[in-house]
Image (cartoon, rainbow, N blue to C red):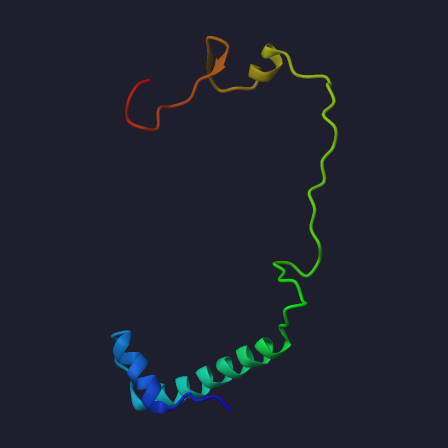
Length: 99
């Protein structure tokens, strides 16, 4: 059993500048008590010989070799563009300034 008491919850409420009703204090006392107990259980299991992990399954990047392939010509890339100029896509300015 943890040491979370209604007085401690009220004190935490004052520190956080949160006004808590008696009903909220009682509810939070129980909830915080469960949280602290669960953290204590995890702390019991964690030992120096167990490496810390961010994922339960080892993750690794999968890379493929770069291979030169067929690419679009400039005309093919621009053929369905709503507007193009000077071999580029032409879009509306978004910063309110003409570039």
